[in-house]
Image (cartoon, rainbow over all chains, first blue to last red; front, side):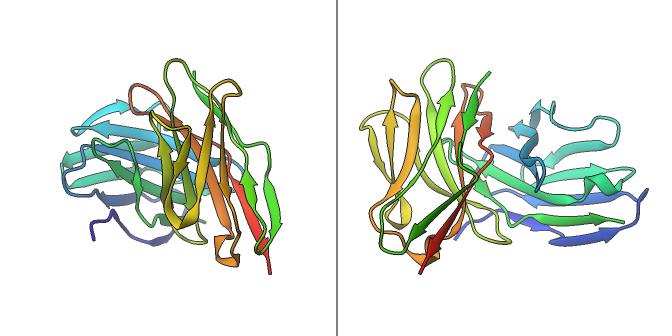
Amino acid sequence: DARVTQTPRHKVTEMGQEVTMRCQPILGHNTVFWYRQTMMQGLELLAYFRNRAPLDDSGMPKDRFSAEMPDATLATLKIQPSEPRDSAVYFCASSGGQETQYFGPGTRLLVL
Amino acid sequence: AQSVAQPEDQVNVAEGNPLTVKCTYSVSGNPYLFWYVQYPNRGLQFLLKYITGDNLVKGSYGFEAEFNKSQTSFHLKKPSALVSDSALYFCAVRDNDQKVTFGTGTKLQVIP
């Protein structure tokens, strides 16, 4: 049963620290998305990649967030330095040629 | 720019009654429309999609959605609600670049 995996599932850190979240898309999927979900803002698209190339990162705060795909099996989202307002659940999703997105379980981030 | 509206923050329905969760959309060109469900502390799960063809789309767990081009709507329906259907439901629309815009979500509460 192929699924998207994300690590860590939970992260508590202090303001100013670097946070790295990892995502393993479903094997063979060529498009990877990063979302952030909060009660106030709902689900926000941060960035997405196709064939490892960034297509759109307009939803991402450029000064502190960065997203990369070092290879086809790994996507990373980094926050440096982290701030309390970054506290949220971060989801990774992947899709192949059928448009449907498959979501990972999320990383629940708390920045103190 | 494409957009999706879910006018109801919450829908309450008695178990066994039919349910409808509303969604309207705006997109240039042919719409690609989706419904996803999110259970507590989980990622979003795909329910169904409309790409082309029949206006009534059948999906997982007995859900279906009716595409209405003239009203630009894509309402989610189920003939008989279950308590286990209680969750957060998201409507989404996709553009030609595979970028997906999600609605704000509707919380469905099925009352025993």
